[in-house]
Length: 399
Ligand SMILES: NC(=O)c1ccc[n+]([C@@H]2O[C@H](COP(=O)([O-])OP(=O)(O)OC[C@H]3O[C@@H](n4cnc5c(N)ncnc54)[C@H](OP(=O)(O)O)[C@@H]3O)[C@@H](O)[C@H]2O)c1
Image (cartoon, rainbow, N blue to C red):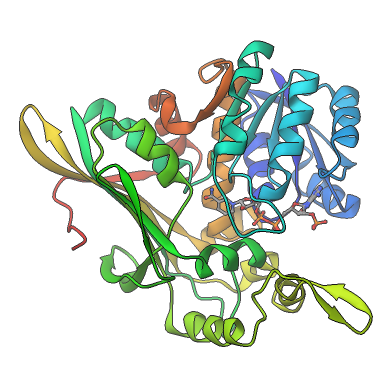
């Protein structure tokens, strides 16, 4: 039985907190800490009442000293970081100083530069090893389940995986002309960046949204999808021996893209500070303030997500194709947790990864991406905790 400290009280944290209290064989106590105490308390009140003791606290996770003080006071075995990617390094630093395990769902991104890569976090590898503590990076859906699916496919279905396409389809409709399903700042930074995919040992760069394909997703229908760079490409390119190509596609509706183009053209997606009425503001942060809060989309969103991986590789000398995917329902996710499916598909794997560290299955001193660890128990827990996976042995391929 173990205590966890969760940082953040947004959409993903809402789901993960529900799932931690559901998994009361592993979690005995959960402290939810966030920048706004009222939000942490509101989430505590939503999930408390069962066997797991739940408390709330206030913390500014940009401040290592505050984090260290909170960890020393609460003495958790693991910190589940569900705030923003900007806080990855401060929280890892605090975990290192207090010898506490760490888990997140998104890799580090500096606030003032639209750039993300694992290097900053991988640089902690030796220090975590020496301290005897485990850091699990990217235990959401993508990254997260996509890496676990890859490890599972490699372990059970292939001798070698040569091509991997990750397809992320959100067929949900919230009825707004424009809103983002998770933190608008992070989402828009991701979509407006250049695309990139891995081929023959190197990354090939594209213009933003330059490569478009369409795919018929089960329970969603035919959707346009666009090649994006996504963080798991960096780790999977290293961790899948024999891999020759990895691409990541995400679906976007026409209305979303039209609005985004206008916002970009008028400068609203910029992260360069500007002077406005005597104050410095960052246009993208201002845009975030006027857009619907992702948490408010939950009750309005209908439809499903369909996210997974298509693998091409070799088994017993023969070429084969294999697909693993999950379908999640926005309304069912909301009915269960009060958050929609994008938060649900991230919060469930965050709980599972943390649970596996606490039970010792994934306790391995150092800094690891999920595909480096054994996938079997994680795959079982996906079925148990609300994200069942589906296999397709004759998948339609992406041209
Ligand atoms: N891997 C995946 O599949 C996947 C998918 C979706 C999202 N994600 C990641 O999941 C994380 C959470 O996303 P979300 O949609 O839940 O975001 P969200 O709804 O915006 O919630 C973020 C939470 O973090 C808190 N926070 C922000 N800065 C903080 C700070 N300095 N100190 C303490 N708390 C702070 C926020 O507090 P306030 O309310 O006070 O601002 C809020 O409670 C993000 O890192 C996102 O990139 C991963």
